[in-house]
Length: 292
Length: 344
Image 1 (cartoon, rainbow over the protein chains, first blue to last red):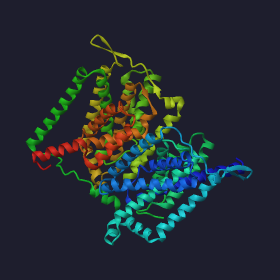
Image 2 (tube, each protein chain N blue to C red):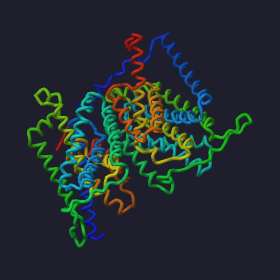
Image 3 (cartoon, one colour):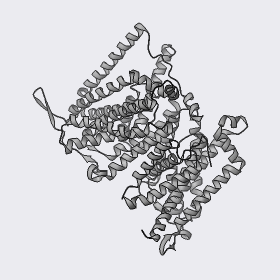
Image 4 (cartoon, rainbow over the protein chains, first blue to last red):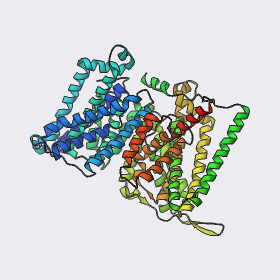
């Protein structure tokens, strides 16, 4: 492999990893604080992509607007789910929580089919980012680089938010011990809603960014949720560095494994997960609570 | 810490393991009688119902066995598998391959399903039983989707997205008459016999001392571990038995539908038995089978009117989770006991 094609593949791998990271870190945030594995996280990602299509594709509004509106819309849907339904079952068994979020997978998947049909919906790339730059004599789309830059920025913002703000402090407190936090005057129900909304926002952002890249399809939610589960299991549930590491590992495997053995990317991903779980049953960065 | 809290929050089954003397004898007899009545009713059913209902009932029986096998892991051992369809599909493909490629008769195909499911579970179980709770669910899900990816992509062997077709089931001669195995009523009885055997085996396993240990593991695996019982080995055995019985159900579904299809291994198929189990109630032996039966029956009603079956299923699930903890059978027995005033 020449240097230039290696670099191109590497960039592809990293931009895919950043997309995976955004979705995974949202899932981890929700798990770390609420203790709920959100099966519907992939469905929310899908809704984000369709919302982006609706705004930037169907209504032909600039993509920059969709980048704000679509994730916010997903955050609103997430809030509704948390406040009306999920909130009632925190005390119940973990299986019950899984089932309820699974119910939302079924509902959201079908609602999307009901509204947008089963066809592929392509969102045009924003004009500003639609060109290509020359890297080692090869053309590389600017949009890929945009995602590569945006990923770490979001990670940094998230880190600052959780580690350096007073709201983040309360989030960490509730993650460690929700009863103690509540006793000390933290409004835990509101906090949980906010965290769920933020996690949903991240899923929606991932979907929005994916829309011009890979088009919106009804099956995109379940594809991403499987990959996201692999990422968080490899990295460790509730861990931000884990999500980043897992996403990078999976991104690299996804890009480079098929070059060696065709169509092997998923098999290799599962193999990675099986090996990590055998050596470290709680992932590479095991943590009892949310860690950034 | 969190995990412990969750375990403790679970309603503990406080019913006595053994009832005393006479009452025990009576209950055991009533149980046997109820079982015999159920099997008798199922044996008469195809003569009363038309062919469409017979086909529907066949499907319900097959999925009933599948759901009961799932519940050995979930209801008994407390392990929520989200990839149980892998063993179902493994059985389906094993039986289809044996019947088409090796040209063996139907019983060999059904048996191959059992073996296929067991082998697959024996392989994946090594990894799955090592992890707990949520990690178990995620790992089983991943292995389930691995099977899906493999059968989807190994076009040369499995036929890929077209599925693996089998057309001829052959015939048997009973009392001098040639019976086509593909005939709905004949296949119904093949299914009934197989399912009754499979379910009886699961019931035996569940009520044996082995099953008691599984329940103890569900309630508190740490304490069972301290008692010197090898938790992992018990979990592994349960995993393989559950896989074998799911494979047996798969060994029936392929000849029934005349196709083994990748969708059978998809996680939505796994989710359907999870859903059926919760719908029926996982605390009772027949709960999962009843719940899955209700689900298939509902599906047959709804799909005639709308293509948005998943949406309906999602709403049903939501209502169940919020308002009917313990499922249909669980709620019914609770109400019955309250009315009888026995307090249990």
